[in-house]
Image 1 (spheres, rainbow, N blue to C red):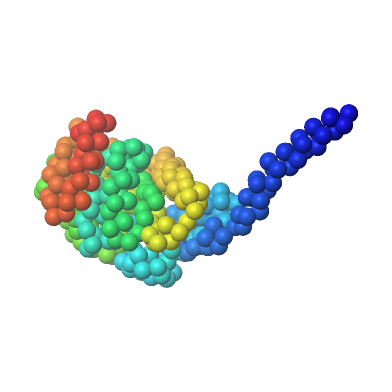
Image 2: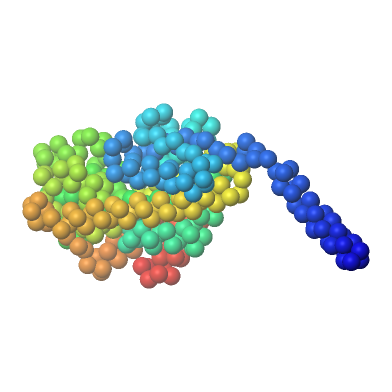
Amino acid sequence: MSGDKTTATRRGFLAAGAAAPLALSMAARPVRAAETASWRFQTLWAAGSINMKIFQDFCANVGAMSGGRMEIEPLAGGSVVGAMELYDAVQNGILDGQNGGGGYVAQKDVAFVMLGDLAGAYERPDQMQAWYEYGGGKELARELYAEHGTYHVGLVWHGMESIPSKKPIRGTADLQGVKMRAPTGAVSKILEKFGGAPVPMPGGEVYTALEQGVLDATDWGTLSMNVDLGFEKVAPYALYPGFHSMPATDIVVNLDRWNALPDDLKEILTVATRDFGRDMYQRLMVEDQRVAQTAGERGLTLIDWPQAERRRFRETAVDVWRELAAESPMATRIVDSQVDFLQQIGLL
């Protein structure tokens, strides 16, 4: 019995001794301030828009996924700085992060534009998402943004843009002579290749310009975004499904603040951003389809370009991408990577 008692005592001592280091190690791990984060992100989207609502949902998801350890305050476009100053505000630590876009940083390097919207390249957002996740895109993006003091968490698409027009545009031949509002850059240069006349114009002037015949068409937003602005009342035709432009916004954070995050919060923010990209384009796709189903009632004629015309537009666009990228080694790498991927999936 005494032997059994001694054995039991030894077992108890050994069990306690084994547990003690674990207990001590757990007790020695207080939660540090760096393991929580309270950040402010500004978006490009206006307060009250569906895009802003989706951005707010993203911020709420980060809080829920992290158990409240990471809170992001969603700020509407213009809340702290204007769209053109947004990236610099993140880079300089005025804001922790942004839902911005590469087109607003073109003056730093045209590579930002080639990453954010390779005009005419893709048929659907999930194709570019596949390039970003699995075709080398995110590695190039993170290298580019790190050179400018930020971390590129991921891309976010709002869908394929439609072209509202006053007359039917059924293929590339119909672009001849078309006066179309288009920003300076790839879309304008591609339009010129087909004999069109790009017109740079502030967004607030587009409706009146279409109404008065100053413009024949405009490069603007998705089908539902265009209908929200009433474009169908002055431009009764629309290219749908769109293909000429699929601009992506992004989630980008200050590099020092990213580096200070613990690994699990980095992973949570990365996964939430990936879901944000899916959520944005799928919810807007549903809105586009709702508008498309009622197009006739709105007096709107939808035009779906045949694949041969889309390919002709895309193949012409390749020359423009390479021309624009020539001034930047990083832009050239980003274009080459996407061209390889487009060939891989059969779009070139």
